[in-house]
Length: 134
Image (cartoon, rainbow, N blue to C red):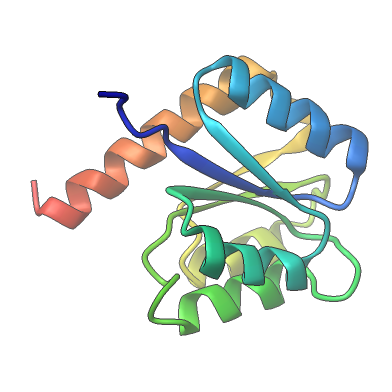
């Protein structure tokens, strides 16, 4: 029987980056799902129930902070771990996101895809430990 793949929802309005992230995650054995803005991301989080969400902060329709608030206010999605992706060196927004319940963040220009995969695994392990009380 196949082990269930870990599902990652990538909420990113830059299509090239969304595609690159999805491909990299698939190569690493994850199931990757994409959304192009915050509204679509919130809807997909509820319908797909991913194991983790990568969330861009600056997007059309609904920005990452607004999407994060909606995710955390919804009983169905509030426990899904969120990692913020940002181009910003705007740490106020990042600290807002962390205070709203994001588990970590990455500045897009400062990481390699291997580091992203490592961070995803760390956050998933930490979330699992918190959920089980270990």
